[in-house]
Image 1 (cartoon, rainbow, N blue to C red):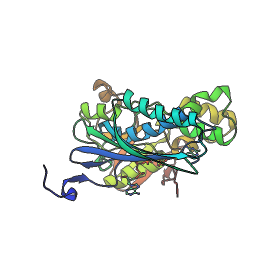
Image 2: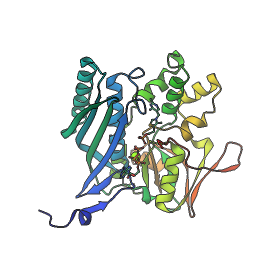
Image 3: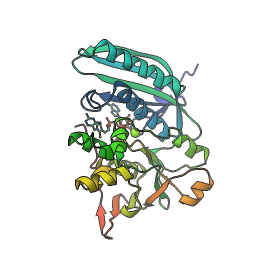
Image 4: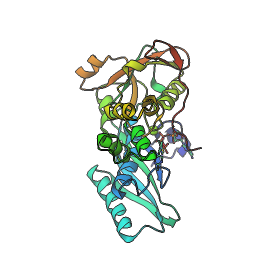
Length: 303
Ligand SMILES: Nc1ncnc2c1ncn2[C@@H]1O[C@H](COP(=O)(O)OP(=O)(O)OP(=O)(O)O)[C@@H](O)[C@H]1O
Ligand SMILES: Cc1ncc(C[n+]2csc(CCOP(=O)(O)O)c2C)c(N)n1
Ligand SMILES: [Mg+2]
């Protein structure tokens, strides 16, 4: 039994995607009804899956694999027996198909629903931290982004039935991510900074730059924008930047490495180079017109 006090055994506290304690990666992400999901927009199964994904994504961002979960459910008093049963079943299936053991939790009821997961995982090697970005490295995103923000726009503007944009609608309701991406980065020997894209690229770039004490410069023309987000923006005349720069819930990874796209590919990792890490502070973007814009954190905020 380790006799050291918890604070001495804590390796990394609040501020990153997970805390690290006795070798465990530990994260908590909640989904509140009407803030994160609506059961007239999504099925109970989609709402549950998205909450699980948001937690798994934090573990992946640190280079880990999810292993254990504690589950808190606040049941909306108005959910009928079928919805309650579907939610319970979706959590059970969602954890077991990922090999995650549900080791406890709590159930209460109130006027609105809430899911609260505490997830524990194991790093497959040296954990990836938000503070790991170093000047000279390249900045990457793991997949095209902007789909979830576009899907949210569709719901907020009553376009969710449009057959041409069902890809972004379903990405918003339940993002399908590569849950092993972060662990694969560690397996490939990558040791830069990393964060998951939950609050939007502008916010997460600033998190990375601030935590690492560096400046980040991205190039707009290099951003892999999800084709569905482009399609929606062209069809409805919305600035696509709203979706990939300021939208949230993409749950893809933003990371840095001294690799290029090609050398990453040779290591079995496919990702998109979007910019560079420089000495200094803050985030800037070379726009499509060549101007340099300062990028402030303007993603989703609950407060
Ligand atoms: N109420 C809180 N008490 C203590 N630490 C908190 C609290 N809320 C957030 N944190 C910590 O602050 C840091 C930043 O939180 P943030 O919610 O941005 O992280 P995240 O879990 O990666 O993001 P998201 O919730 O958007 O997926 C994390 O380390 C998180 O654990
Ligand atoms: C009904 C409904 N309204 C709005 C949104 C948009 N939304 C909610 S939380 C969030 C960012 C990440 O949050 P967190 O930091 O809590 O993980 C975003 C973009 C939604 N998903 N559902
Ligand atoms: Mg995160």
